[in-house]
Amino acid sequence: MTQINTTAPRGFAIPALAPLFSELRARFERSRRYRETFDELNRLSDRELTDLNISRADIHRIAHEAVYG
Image (cartoon, rainbow, N blue to C red; front, side, top):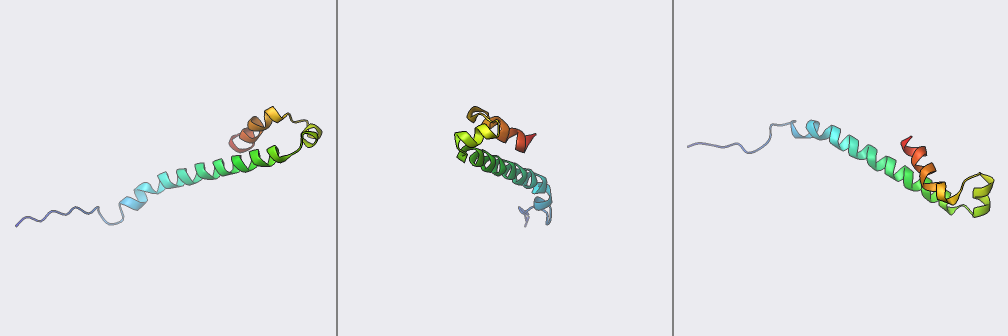
């Protein structure tokens, strides 16, 4: 009788996927920081933004540069 092993070698799957999960975690973290930065700037009043010399139209760009460089 022939026996077929359909399981992956022990310890193979997790280490091979570790870089993928690490990259996904890093992307999620950057996305979260972008949203927090954008939301924080967006909550400021027009007067507060003017004091910081920021136009409301620049909030997206500033948040993006702060997180992604």
